[in-house]
Length: 145
Image (cartoon, rainbow, N blue to C red):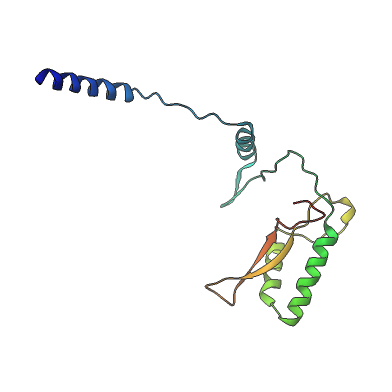
């Protein structure tokens, strides 16, 4: 019986010695993860007390459809809705985005190769009088997403 316990103790000790060697299996990164890491490493920078980073587009040079008319129509619908239900906080939020440099008025649309995000407002559940502006990047336009 003592012989069996000694063998068992030796087997357990050897097992844990092998486990504690520090050999770990690396997980292989696929091409998408490597590309995303490269983009984040190359574009992330600190500006003052805030951080800025590049967007992780599926392709390096994405081509967006000209969705200006669709976004403009949606904005007109929101403005009509606001005429029935005034929302000065929405206007104040948009003005704050412009003031902080996150949005800008387009002077000459011909020079722009951008995608226009439609916006809508959401009331905060815990603060019913406070709204937030939501940029709808998931809005469909001519079958694209």
